[in-house]
Image (cartoon, rainbow, N blue to C red; front, side, top):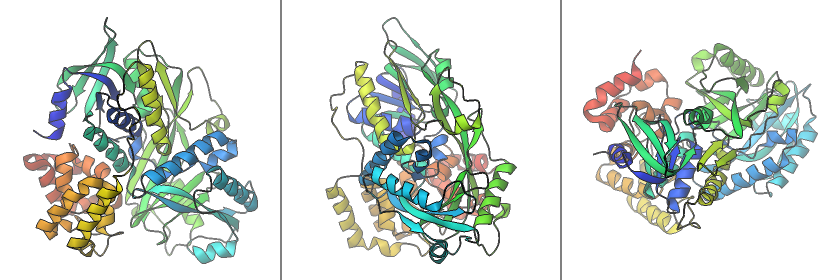
Length: 536
């Protein structure tokens, strides 16, 4: 019996301290924190882990410098401290990166004023990163010749951080940690609604969306962590809350690498909106728009594509302008923004100034918690807040001081590096890789990377990439098949890895490596899973 089937069996008819509905970043950190501290936790999601908003971020871990314009200094301080905490806790996964900002004639603020703002931002963040610097147009051109400085009035450079791998992978690593702490986590399990019985227990009807089977789970506490769907899930269970969501759509286009320098190029579009060119391995991710929408269900429109392409082409000196044929893949998602339930934000100005803070609504009488909004940068704070809230609802956490996040201890890392040196692992790194194998495997798998070394020792072919230049090797497949609850091919290509982001759909379809992967992941069901993903 595979891991997912085994966990479904554990769910059915069981009673838990806490049932968490939604396995994006908020649900994942809540599950990890609670399970690590001794609670009996179940975590379910109607789709895959990190399958919605948490797979469509900008991959940035930043302190929110743009919120300084609306004077949200307490929020900026909180996010900067959270960023610093993540940089210390996940040095392999989260890296400091420079943001290189060019300003053009007619911009609403002079460059030196923004540079002073960057200095204040640096100070608010306790001077944790490299200091900002002011840039005159000639310096911008010398350092990044790809930037069009014809209309430049100068700019500035400052530091924030980014996820080296994709956001969904970072979320899944929390899921993996939660499971190691005995959390029963299952994807493709939908909540059909919850009711309270006379004993004060929650009874939740769940449906296995892959076979239609339904069953009941009982819990003392429910946490609604459904991201943009928190309001809808609360309606299903007749739960009223102090807050609700409105939605902002963001898109990113993944294109061939624009610059070899590992920095984020930052611009202001013709309409004043901020957008970026962000490194993604051997690719560049360009976006984002900030468009008000009424529903979590969104898609990239032709207007969105043209907006990004027009603005990036105008601001870069490219041998050939980027066009739709250069788009390798697209990302589109909504950012759920928090407002009070009776509040209205009718004008664009009011809406653009909405706070990006998260909110945790706790119904003490019903023992129900709803998590609204939030940013990946603030995820560790969310985990801690949820632990406090659950304890206030009467759930005892026997290991309440236990640290539940961060990379494995130094002793385990040293053991891993000793084995890496003995077998000469890094010599097997493929020529097109963006980093050596030892660094990549440790970042993605932590202590479990030691087991992958044994696979490579037995068969060096396991260190070869599935597709050249995609930074995913064959031995990772056995790990994925055994431990990562992959149900569809998209789960693997889009969320456990970023292959679907950095390789064209047609190239994936023609790849023998992906066909081999499908066989390893799904066995006799491989043809069905293949056709499901690549159907024309």
